[in-house]
Every structure is written in structure tokens, then in C-alpha cells.
Image 1 (cartoon, rainbow, N blue to C red):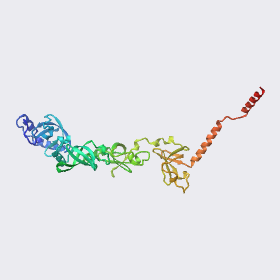
Image 2: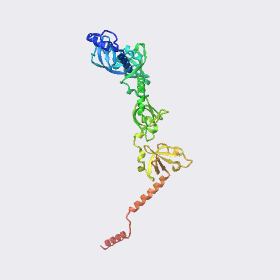
Image 3: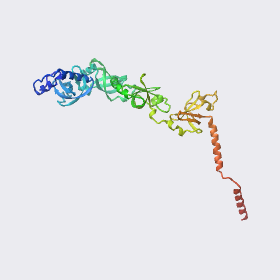
Image 4: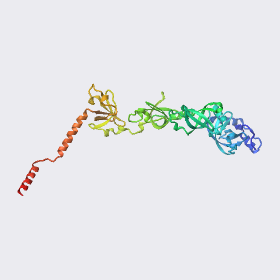
Length: 412
């Protein structure tokens, strides 16, 4: 026998179960148990997807045991297939979304499955519940999203927390969305994925902040890229700045060469300023430090070449290798005081120089262009001397041998 039509209050589970079995009305639950069940229902948040076991099925609604002493109600229409037949039985486990906690738990299975009706879309809009939608295509100003048989519009700013993501990252994907505008009976829908992501961030912010300490290595997501660096979401909506100077040991002219919005990136937390809520991040610290080998690689007196990177008034900066820059003081450039350093040494030009001084601990290397000619001359003298020493000396012994050979030939 089926339970009579109508909603089934959660505290009447025993009544429903015995009504189905044809047993007489049980004793009424005491107030304490009813109050406890009501309190437990309130602890389950609206919008949460939960799993439960069907314990009774009526003509218009069914009861679902969701654990402990909590029970929930779900409309019978939520349990029917496309042909109108009930596709579940008592004892089956289902997943459903909590659509209301007032006076007991009310569930919606179709909200969880994304197969919602126009009436359910309106309920989701008014209750602030998420619905599943598939991003169909890019349109002017945003994206067309398919929610069951309905079309919705998601503005480009509402598809993600990360700004500037490519359309290809979203088209074809199924996401949960929040309905922000419901007009013309559901024919005009505006949805937002970003609102849900921000809601999740707020829920996880406190926990995420515990792991963000100086020295921690964290994988985050690039939110935006500016000319001075990139902002990285470290979880829970907490962002840190990866400054361009901390991206690589080599000088980076354009931060977008290293990171793009939406990229996952592993960084090291350099500083956390609690009062100002500023978090400084580093990427190069996770890479090998090129200065660790400088002491063995570069020696005073060496003739080397490198690329000009900067030309301030006091000299020239030259890149010896990625991440290692050295200075040629203006007095060592060979250019007079009235000369134009920038014209003589344009950025990007390959030049030769002599290593004058190496201080690896202070990360300083001093170079000289003026000494290049002296080193070249010294090398030429050394090469000439070595070649001259390598020639066999034509002394008296060799001349006597030649004279004997000549006399021998004449006597014969």
C-alpha cells in the first residue's frame, strides 16, 4: 500500500514505514528526539549534495534516510525516468541536493543530475542553489550555457575567478552555476560560475591560510599577469605576488613569458606580512642558483664575451650567462667622459671584456673593456715565444754536419 499523497514530515518516518507495511500507528516520538532531528537537519547546509537511502515511497513524495537521525523528503517526480516510471525502490541509495532546511530537509535529485525543469530552475534561483550546465560555445560578451533544455548566458567575467582565460579552456566543460537572473519564466537566464568559486574560496580561506607560511612550497593558480609580475591564488582566494624579479635568475622583460592566467605553478613563500596581508612569492628559489658555480667558472684575467643588458650612467651591465650579470664601470669602458656609452654599447650587443674581480658571496663581478687590448697583446707575445721556443736551434753541430756531407760528395 502506498503512502497517501502529500509531503512526508521527516519526524514521521516510523509512521510512513508502518503505513506501507499496514501496521498500526506507532507511539508518537518524544519532543527531545524531534528537536534533535530538527537541529541535525539545520546543520546540513542548503546547496550541499548528500547521499541517502530511500526508506519509504508515497504517491507525491518519498523519505530518504541521510544518516544519524536525519531524514529528508524528496518529490516523487524527482525519482521518475523519461517514461514516467519510478526508477528507484526502497533500500536504494541516491545522491541529491539539499534545497531547503526549513522544517526538515527537502531534496532535489534532478538539481544534482543537471536535469532540471523550469519550475526547479526558479526554485534554484530563489534559494541560491547551484545547477549543472554545459558550456556550449563562446558568444559576444560571454558564453552560452545549456542547463537541461534551457539556454543561459554567462558573462565572460563570471566564467572563472581567473581573468583572461582562453575560451578553449571552458567550451565543452560541465560546471555548476549559480542563477543570478531569472526572467520571462526561465527563458532568459544569466548564470555565474565565479560566484560559486568565490563561495568555495571563502569556505576554505581559513584552512588555506594555515599552510601559507614563510618557506612553504605551494602549488597555486595564476590569476592575473601584470608588467611587474603575476598574482597567484594559493587556495581559498588568498593571493600572493610573484614579482618579475623573483621569476627567474635571468632578467625577465615580460612576465607573460613565464606565467599565463590559469596556469598551475609551484612557488615558494618568501615573506608573509600579516598586518598588510601581503604575501611575496618566488619561483627562481626552486631552481638551481647559477651563482653557486661562479667562483669556479670565472677567474680574474680571463678574456670573455657577453651580452649588454643595461647601460646606466655609471657603466655597463653584461650578462655572462642566464642569471649572472657583471658590471663594466664607466672608467673601464675605454670611452672618455664626453663619450656616449649607450651609443657605443647598445643593449643586446655582444662584446669582449676581461674579468677583473670576482666576489661570489656578494654576487659581484667587475669587468674591463680597457684591459682587452693588453690581454690580447700579452697573449700574442706568449704565443710568439712558445712558437719560437718550439723551433730547433741551428747551432754549430748542424753546420758541421752539412760541411761533412758536402766534402763527402765532392770526394766521390
